[in-house]
Length: 291
Image (cartoon, rainbow, N blue to C red; front, top):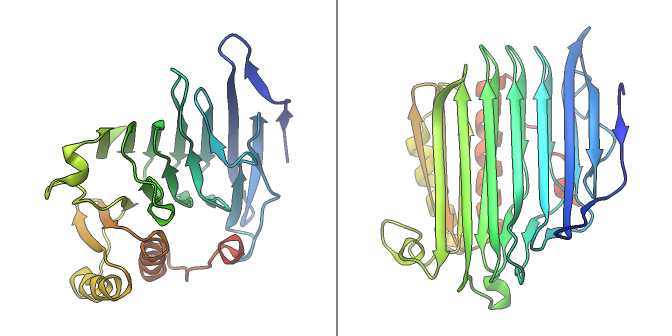
């Protein structure tokens, strides 16, 4: 690993904010994807890289030992995939935005750069927004040339399994995908609980979990039949619905439901179905998902 910079936990003493950063560069050489320059500070780390698919695909696990963010805490994640490199980034557990008793925001900023011929799969576990949180979750992706991005976001409002609903608080969440510096997919959610967006028929319909899958490719896939079968599976489990749309250069799948495990399994099933079509590689489930 070249040029790794390590610093201790960084705290803004004036505002008592706990800041953390991970910035990683990945490059391809002689058929291998490797980590290049890496920087991190604060409670944000990575395990050593794994190569369960062979040396051309690097699996990376982002670790945030505190497990959640309180008021003033911010995570910054930057991934730069150089030409022809292939990296799969995931997390070992859900990210939590705890009840905020300060006047400071809390959240996460993700920036992903996919150069020509490179591939980034960004498949984190869900975000759980606790009642009373004031969360900001922003992801910005820029794909160049023949690069490919596959990613998802899953967000759970409140903790219904613990009978704690998201009755007060705020969430501002955005997902921005650019292709050659031009907008390809821009999505934004902004709400203050209680909100008509959470209850309305054109919104979340009193369901607390929503998510999006984005693939920057034109996929030859009969998603109508698959979508119908998956919706029946979700209905048989604990409810929920998934809808898939293919637009020029980007496939978008959205999910809405109330049971995190069922929603995540639906996204994993879609990824397993589409990865061979898009990347010519069978899905290789990160082993951290099985622990």
